[in-house]
Length: 336
Ligand code: COA
Ligand code: MG
Image (cartoon, rainbow, N blue to C red):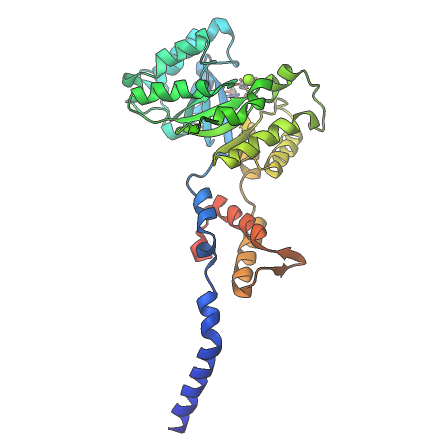
């Protein structure tokens, strides 16, 4: 009896002390549902590899690559005289009339020519037809040199007429494109429902504004940050420029780290040897993951607004950054 009384008393005391705290302690995934929902819809591609459409050899070879996204190119990787051959090669593949078989249509997009110009119109006519789209052999269109809301709107309209949905990636690579980003993404309150990501094209942009390329890359910073900023504001992916020094791994590594630091979700590439390097850099490392898990656990246990985390004042934005790392690593936050 005495024992029971003691147990009951102890229980009552601890219940009095603990209950309010338990009631207030939410798991991390319950504390930031909007933030988590805004990030976890799609895992963004880390790499976007260009494959010139006029090279059957490269088209064939690309079917083996473990790259997140592959763009069969009908535009600037192909000289004008070869554009119709490139179009024919790619058309044969996506209409299953070629001996080149692309296993994963989700991985495959096609870069059109400028949609308001002659070659771009031919691309639209060739690919955005019900007979082609109904075969579901590719999942998106990459648009070059986007400068107006209509450039994207026109493509969406054509896809809708075929009663289909595709991912659209828009490349910003001219002075006008960068200056107009917001108006291109939103016009009179209308937005593009199929737009998935914004891509930065450094070479055309440099030619457009007349800047000189320097090792620091300072001349590109405003445009690159504008892409990241607008992509984040509109819930889109952001894919950084190509590194044309494809034989120099150290340049690729530093440029990719810089892109991650700026906030890009992925990077354009041109050579298969760049795939693994870039994908590794855009994937959270083991130490980043361990660090994020430790932070979330301690923040939850601490149950205050701010935590001293190894000398860092960790508050909500720091916790959100840790959540982003774990989502990117495809870790279930509710189980952390
Ligand atoms: N897609 C598919 N395969 C590619 C490729 C690509 N982008 N780039 C190289 N390869 C293949 C080559 O055909 C070669 O195949 P093999 O081993 O069977 O002969 C292999 O990968 C190694 O290539 P390598 O010999 O080192 O390079 P290359 O001289 O053949 O090509 C480039 C160099 C830059 C011309 C080539 O990488 C390329 O065409 N890149 C795409 C450029 C582009 O699209 N630019 C426009 C977008 S900004
Ligand atoms: Mg370009």
